Length: 224
Image: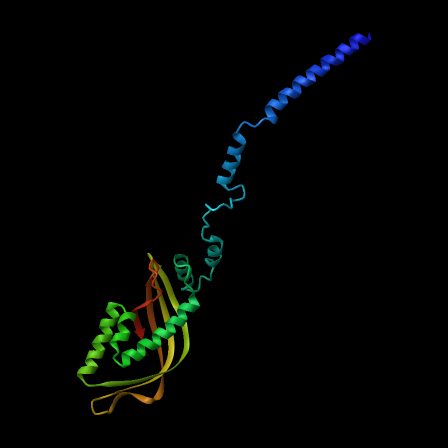
């Protein structure tokens, strides 16, 4: 009886051993497919990104998505976002500070007929219009006395990205004194003592593909 029980135990042990061996051959051995599975997961994006030297950081689209939620009532908001995406170095406040300086330089140079200062700041069309007025003054021996007083307000009225060219229109509410005198020194326009309020809309342009940070004045309107 004891011998028969021993035989049964041995048979059970042999069967268990065979089962464990088969499980080991399926689950315990590497076939080479494990790495492929992990790599596939990484490519899809389910695994943490590699931190190796070959990783290229993409632009942060999360911030861009937040910026695109700017109030729809602001006509310049979307244009400024588009310009920022095309030129990561663009900052609206820095641009406005440059626009203030450009405005003062241009109006002072225009009054003084300083073509050397005006030429690099203006587009061909705007320069031609300014030059025509300056030549007419020269033909009539007229002189303009101009003095900038202050800005009341400067704001971006419109912004747009056309292809890779950024265009921003700025509204300038400024104060200055101005008078035009004839060849004999008589005032024929303006008042050298009276402060005048003026509202101008100027449009500046820049190719975002270039390394040149300077903007060009391409259109003007206002003056009233």
